[in-house]
Structure formats: structure tokens, C-alpha cells
Amino acid sequence: INLRTVYAFAREMYPKISTTPIQYGTAGFRGKAEFLDSVMFRMGVLATLRSRYREGAVIGVMITASHNPEPDNGVKLIDPKGEMLESSWETIATDLVNVSDQELEQHVAKIIKDNNIDVTTSSHVFVGMDNRYHSPRLLKAVADGVIALKGNVREFGIVTTPMMHFFVVASNTKEAYGKPTEENYYEKLISAFEKLRNGQLENGKYRNNLIFDGANGVGARKMLQFLKRMNNSLAVTVINQGIGSGKINEECGADHVKVQQRPPISMPIVEPYTRCVSVDGDADRVVYFFSDENGQFQLLDGDRIATLVAGYLMDLVKSCELDLRLGLVQTAYANGASTDYIVNELKVPVSCVPTGVKHLHHKALEYDIGVYFEANGHGTIVFSDSAKLTISEAAKTKPKARDFLLIIDLINETVGDAISDMLLVETILNHKGWDVRDWISSYVDLPNQQLKIHVKDRNVIKTTDAERVCVKPEGLQDEINQVVANYKRGRAFVRPSGTEDVVRVYAEASTKEDTHQLAYEVGILVQ
Ligand code: NG1
Ligand code: ZN
Image (cartoon, rainbow, N blue to C red):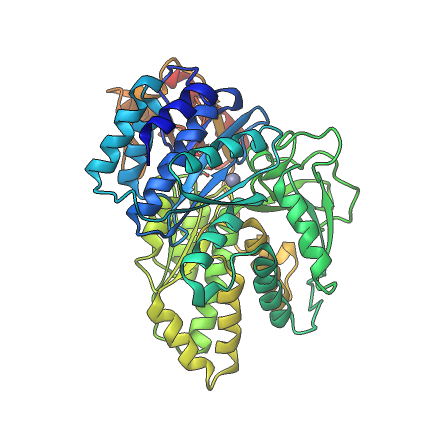
């Protein structure tokens, strides 16, 4: 390997055109697409080194800005078991993208030396992208970064983020997941889903039809692929398919529906209580919603999915008489009413961790069965190896435990997967014979609101206690406490976003008016 090549490549084709520092945040690097070419090239370089560092295991690179607007793009690395990049390498990534082109060659040499990387060994990088128009250009930059260091690159084209995680883990741990192909991904989920349906398409109040808002992103295309391969086991109408003038995430998708608390654009007229689903631009988040008979919009967010799934899995554990510890993980954005329901009704242990799936995932691994969801619909369920063994053992004699194994097959354990999560929710509702009214009646959400506040430097805000308490600037938390104290069931917190240049304000209280007022008052304190 000649590191000169890296420098030459960088200088000629991917020069660094911005000196504004950029940081590997909650979901990798994000920003305006026109500034990202050099970041992508360097992430190709880094993924190649990471693969060598991990003895030739496949490392994934996903190009997407998820729920962000169309002009944005981003990149995140996927570690060998399909998990998020190890945090010590996030720092290495941040340093690498911020050095000048002139320093690049030396800096790469330093990473190689510091980490004892044998550059003569082989290296394998998988790369995929969402359907933004600038993604193919950025994908080429990543691939060139891999090639500059003589690594092997395999391009998957337009895929969802969770599909990329699936390909990486499938390739590195061959037994459990089968081949790292798109076909195999569909086959694994559809086969589990259809076996769980067992020909029973409707049950009790459960109806087999729903509306799917694809956010004009990759989720729409992939849902259509699912439908082609499913034997009508689900009747899905896909809207915001990404054809025509609609832009990714604009007036549609999971983030819009959750934050604005209203339906996406292009909603057809449907019967009240029809289940509707929104995913985000790269299809790792999902929320449900519907309109009641008064035309009122009702949201079933990540907290609702978490409680539905946790309740269902608890029942399975009990009815199979298994000795397994189930736990639920949330963030500060979880609705207070959901937390009360989990503790008082489900009686499942619950913990709160900082925003970002990696924190939730990590915590969930402490349980035999760990259910984690962010309120925005990003989440999944993880099972320990011993839990899987226990369930497999039980399946030899108990039919219910066989269902349990199929449920595990239906779940993408590596990361939140909107389509897999949706198929899981559909399975549970079908088994329970529930419609959305049954689902939403388990508890009453507290009214809540999020605000984005633009400030000069969002990083002056520092938090602790899973972001629920603000420690800097000094005095701010006291002021927030004073405001919150005036509201019944009031709760509010502020934190800098890890993906946008804003400070986020969250507020909840017993009434809608109080919630708006509380959010507004806290917002003023931040400005
Ligand atoms: P930031 O921008 O750090 O709040 C957002 C979401 C996270 C997570 C990441 C990655 C909220 C409040 N925040 O992070 O939960 O999903 O994006 O996509 O929804
Ligand atoms: Zn996403």
C-alpha cells in the first residue's frame, strides 16, 4: 500500500472544501451533501482500516441522512456484528475527517501505527445508500476510499439502513442469517411472518389492510418489493413512494408524523380507525397513526410499540413457563404515561439512557430479552444467546415456544428496522385480535411537544442523568425547574441535537395548552 495514493486521490478528486469541524454524532456524520465528498472518501479509507483491524471482517458503510431534509446526506459505519461503530473509533473517525488534505497521508499512517494494523492483510467493505439524488456520487467517494487502500468493496445500491446491518452480520456470522443478499433478507422476514399468520389473515377486530407512508425514501421501494413476494398476507397501500415531485421526508415520514403530530401528505380518504404506518427516509423508524370517528389524528409512537411488544413477549415467556428476564429501555423522550404503564401495569423493569440507539442497544443487552425503542419509533428487541437456547429447548415440546422462535426470526436484532418492526406489530395485533382502539386504550399519552431552538453554539449545553438534567450553562436547570413546577404533571428538558444544529426542547404536561405554554417558556430560557 502506498499512502501517497491516498493523498493524491484526496487532493485530485475529493479535496476538503470546508474547514468547519464536523463530528461523528448520534448517527455518524451528517450535513449538506455538497460538503460531504471528502468525508465519504475518508470514511471509505477508515472502513478499510477498520476491517483489517478486525481481521478482515466485513465493515458496513451506509450513506443516508435518515429523517433529515433532502439537501442533507450522511454516513455511518457498521461494525462486524451489525452493531454501531465502536465509540473509540468514532473519535478516530472525527479526527480523520477534520485533518487537512496535506496532513492526510501522515494521519492515516498514524492510525495504522497506533492501532497496529497490518496493511498487507485483506479488507472487506460493504456499502449501501438511500435514494437521495446525491447518494450515488457519495457512494463512489466511499468506494474510492476503499480502493485507495486496496480493500475489497461490495456495493449494494439503494437499500434501507437495517438491510445494510443485516448484510454485514449475515456475512460475518454465516450460520444465523444466511446469505448477505436482498433476496435472503426478504425471505427470512416474510417466511417468519407468514408462518406466524398461519393463514389467519383476520382475527377478532384485526383487519388485514393498512396504509404505508414511505416518506419518499427507500422504505417505500422496499415495501413494494416485500409486497411482490408476500402471498397477500398483508394488504398494504403504499403512499409517498418517492416517484414524482415529492421530496424525501417532506411533509411525510415518521419524523414529520411524530413531531408535527399530524398525518403525512397524500393521505387517501380512509375509514376511521384504519391503521396507517409511517417510516423515515432510511426505514429504521416506524410509527403508527389513525383518525378516529371525529377525524381526530391519533398517534401510536415508539413507546406504544415498545409496550405492545413487551407485553406480548411477557405473555409468551409466562405461557411457555420460561425463566427469562425481560427489560425495557427508553430515553427521556418517552412519554411519562408509557413509563408509568410499564412500571405499574406490565411490571417490567425499565431504564432510561441518553438519546441514540447505541445507548439503548447496549443497555438492552443486559437482559435476557431487551426491548428498546425511542419515542420516535427507532428500536428493536435483542435476545441473549442463552435466552435463544432456552426458547429452542422449550420449542421441542411447547407449540407456543415455536411461535416464539418465529418471532425471533421476524426481528432484525442488529438495529431498528421499520419494516420488520411493522410486521411484528401486525403479528401481535393479529394474534390478539386487536384494532387500533384496543391498542391505544392501554394508557393515555400525556400531551407533549418538541421545539427546535437555533442558538449560536448548541454545545454550550451539557446534560447528565440520561439528558434529563442540564448542568451547563450554570443556573439553567434551576430556571427550568421553576417553570416546570407551575404545571400539573409537568416535565421538560433540553439537550443539543446530535444530528442537527439545534437545541431540542421537550415538554409534557396534563393538558395540550399547558404543554405548549411549558415548551414555549423553556424555549425562551434556552434562547
Ligand atoms: P438528535 O438529533 O441527537 O436528537 C435524532 C433523534 C434520535 C436518533 C437520532 C438518529 C429525537 C429527539 N432524536 O437525534 O432519537 O434517532 O436522530 O437518527 O428523535
Ligand atoms: Zn432513520
